[in-house]
Amino acid sequence: MELRHLRYFVAVGEEQHYGRASRRLRVAQPALSRQIQDLEEEVGFKLFERLPRGVKLSAAGKLFLEDARRILQEVSEAAARAARVARGQSGTLRVGFTENASWRGVVPDSIRRFREQQPGAELQLQPAASLEQLEAIRSGRLDAGFLNFMPKADPELDQLLVATQHVELAVPQRHPLTKLKKLRLRDLMDAPFVWFPRSANPAFYDRMMHACYRGGLKSPRIVLHP
Image (cartoon, rainbow, N blue to C red):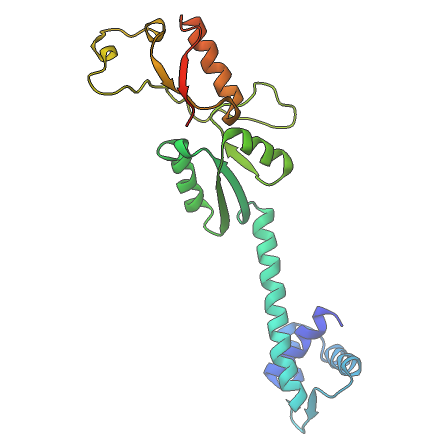
């Protein structure tokens, strides 16, 4: 049984007339009649009762018509979905992001634009540390990710700079450091730091440490890893 058999059957069943169905399908009436006969032989029962003028569906034909319409509709929808995916207009996109990058800026703006431009696509968002995202992208669990920092050379992955973040120093109000007109890294020699662990993002951690060392803060006094 082929899809054309179902299309021919639905046309005849809805028109209840071979002539009108053949014009609707733009198929010669004898060829249409043969296709219906072939279908009836394949299913093993009569789909139509022949009348002096036209045909009418048998009891089994009425039930078969409902299923044939549903099958053709599902095939049409499947083809349309596949076509949208082929054009990049639909499908599922799995994206990772670091939570602090999602508060404002390029991450929420990109998600908003994607929703507007691809309303038929499914967007799956996964909050994760940068290192976890890299592993998920390599394994295929994520399609892309917004990372804070990424190794400069990675033959397995492509990267694109989409934003630049500024690192800021947070201290309590009325802290002695707030009285300085100009703050330098070496002024923080004795300051206790709350610092993220290296395992969370080795590339970012190493860059921060290197920047501190160059600025005169050779060994930050880290007292707590959140």
